[in-house]
Amino acid sequence: MNELNTAAFGNLFAGIHHDANDERIDTLVSRGGVLIERIVSTGQASPPGFWYDDAREEWVALLAGAATLEFEDPAAPPRRLLPGDYVHIPAHCRHRVSWTDPTVPSVWLAVYVGAAPGEGDGEA
Image (cartoon, rainbow, N blue to C red; front, top):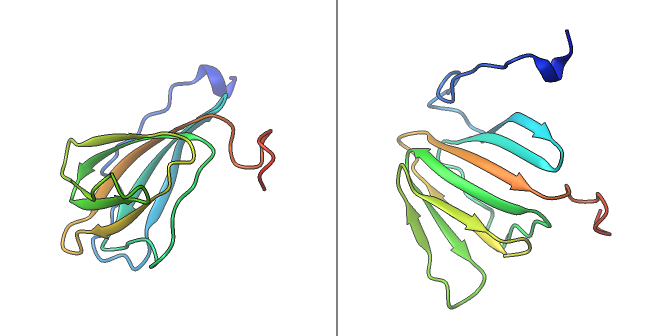
């Protein structure tokens, strides 16, 4: 049977290790310029001075835990996220995760829209 015609099932909270040393990223769907990932953070944050600068639009919802996002734009104050909060981040809007709760896994659902870095945008 064709993979595209088969339903896929899962649970966004399965396989979470509360004491993981590394952030976990699982691809759930990747089709036609759309990438959906589950990200589990257990106290991890972006390194000092590091900014994400993605060529794709990003929509992120925090499903569990807590986190703080910072934006390079000084007019955008840091934003604390709690379960149910979401943010739409335009392409090339520089941002970083400055904090995630070290006591409870922070479970993110991230949806990226547009070409992956290096696909038709001149970036590698």
